[in-house]
Length: 495
View 1 (cartoon, one colour):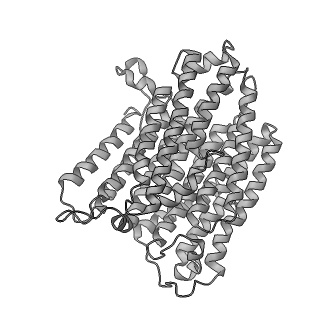
View 2 (cartoon, rainbow, N blue to C red):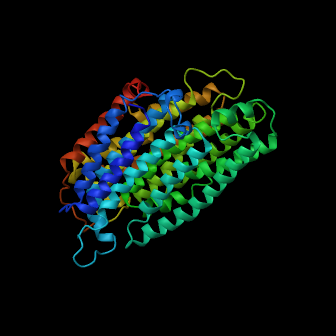
View 3 (cartoon, one colour):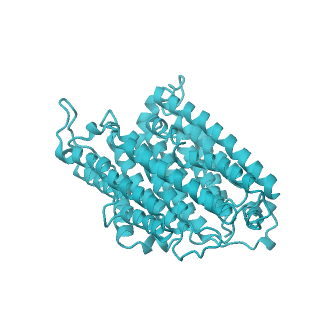
């Protein structure tokens, strides 16, 4: 089966879910989410059976915009699929909140009206994320990126009776449109400079040295602004805390993991094009280094005083973007011999680990949201007594995000630091170590609230119930965090 069949199947699954929602009488629309989970599990299994087609035998010119023979793209497709599965699982737990905060159904309409689209949109976004993972042309990069972004515009503002969600949607729409303008202008400039939209041909044209250095740097600057917005890098990260806080929790998790992963594989491909040009490679590395340092400083310092859990995870997401940019800034420049361990593999491992620990944290948040009215850290006081399992799961997630040894998060940071040492990026390494140290404080203060502080006076202290599918998902994520932290080859084998 050709590899591009995966995206076709995911799009078909989305349409099937829409048709079932429209024409089948469902008493509980959460069954649509389980249909999506089943379909995506099948697609994930097919990920290990696909083959790369011979372009000479493929009659469709459409797939010339699609990277061939790139095993790393399959890894990122897997991240997109797994993220969507877990997001749909969160969405089933969050469905009561969605029903309460969306527009009231008309008389005679289904009481869960609007819930079907909430389950279907992540599936379509998953298809776009998978296309992003294989995009090898400026056109396919732009189309897939905007396909995903438009889907997120709807999802972020989905809670129409929640002012925070509407505000988040407007901010994301305005700033997203602005970043799109930068991206289009950068792509247009790059096309005018090289005469091609194919990344391989652009890289050859830039590497030839027969280009204007200033024009190439200008194109890089425009593209960097757009991609920095997509991955949440400073100083273009200002949308993240408000959007993360206002969006529905499953959507925040999706933005935090899958969108960031797809954004970084596109950034990897685009950065490689400019790093292959000896005229500007050193300047590109310098700019990436400065952006990485700014992102580390802003992300970690602003996370320190946060008392809202979602805002803390938002700023920590910025900090993790800084660590990922460290790897990108530690890439060998044109003319240097690259090592067997390269930025692409380090970023892929880091994002795989980030999927495990971040989605585990958001799963716990989604379950507790049913009994805890607020999202403040104080609301998690005494959680260890109400639900030892949930507190233990959140502790593992926070420990891995902080980078405690034997967890996947520790090795992710270690690999990034190794790359910085390898390229002599000592200043960048120093900021990375300081950022990691700061993470210990703001992540583990959540653990302190759960285990060492008493619940607020008058707060609900009843036990929290956990459904079997959610419990199984949490156990698998916990096992994955420790397995990847002890034996990283498990993740590297999938690349």
